Image (cartoon, rainbow, N blue to C red):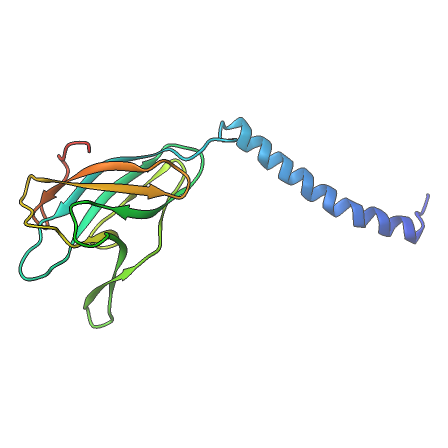
Length: 172
């Protein structure tokens, strides 16, 4: 039976751990590449776009988008603009207080995961807007969505009454 000197055993274990880690990473990257995702950029599209008609004395309302990403990389919605609003639209997230009150909190961006979608709702992420003029149901409002990696998308959101069914809206 051969016994390795202590110095050689220490050297082998010091080299073995990084080699094993690199081999595992290489195997993972190989699987990712074999799955067709290597170098695949995000590809975000808008599947649905609508905006609530303002009601009562409130100067703000909310717009909602369903964003799909059939690309191999995550992207982030980072900016929204509209020529039809008096102030730049803002991404916000709906929160509830312990006493049951609701409020919106601004957020900097919203992730659109690879091969997934982001559906904005009144109970989660949405876009806070201040309308320019009076918006009536059926009218369209123009928005440009900007992403961290993908190209900007200009879409038209249909004005609907708050709480209206949006399942049959036309594709923007």
